[in-house]
Image (cartoon, rainbow, N blue to C red; front, side):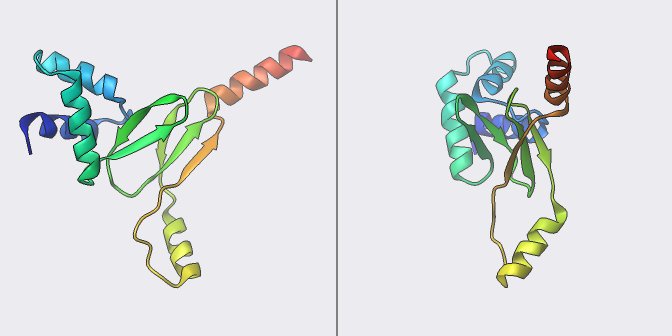
Length: 128
């Protein structure tokens, strides 16, 4: 693995923010002023292809990157906030229903985050 690939991997693995390629590039730029944006994109593509990272795509938003540990995602339909969530019983229930072992799955729940829900409630109360 190249020096840049390792640094990008470490950056994503240490992040709780699900960074975009642009955010990764800006953070890498602070460390390595000579890194090119294409280098970041190429390394991200390789890390995803190698199964070291996952790419989270949402319509109308830049791709985000995350670690590969077993977890699910909550995505706010209003602001796009992305949060990790782990449904511990879900895998066991699905495997029991299927009678087979799950190799992998990707669960993304679209919801209204607490901040957006509060803003919506305030807006609805104001209109009354």
